[in-house]
Picture (tube, rainbow, N blue to C red):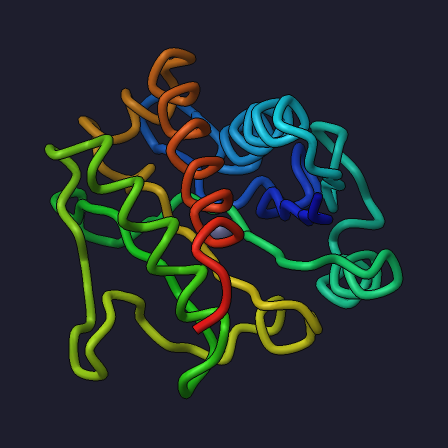
Length: 195
Ligand SMILES: [Zn+2]
């Protein structure tokens, strides 16, 4: 079976909570950790090996993207999925999106597998896609994607700055469904083999 690295965005607590909902105080770092732990549970249940780049609600050494990439690379991860919540100045901004590095890589195929499961699971979640190159991912040379050796994708599950989506992000049942969708996307990636 495969070695999967999950990257719960941000270092947590007072170090780097990530985006925070101004009304409820919900912190991105808490949501990403909860979801990542559930994804790990589902993947381990079907025999995959999993590491998380952060396991504590506040973990100082994880406030370094190099630390996270090194962890994945030294372990020999077969893929990495970085898990985040989106935020915008406009409280209306909403939807889900996934990023890969620039150009056509195995990360694109991973991203497509994951986002397809997310959108199939949550028809109410608007897909923010960039179809210019024929697939739904957006492309940005984010550090975590660029310096991880394995195919990697960064999922922005939904907007924590949007009241309706923040409510979902805080809901353990929604987190569980999201985790199952991400885990299915990852197993799809392995199941369908390389292009
Ligand atoms: Zn983030």
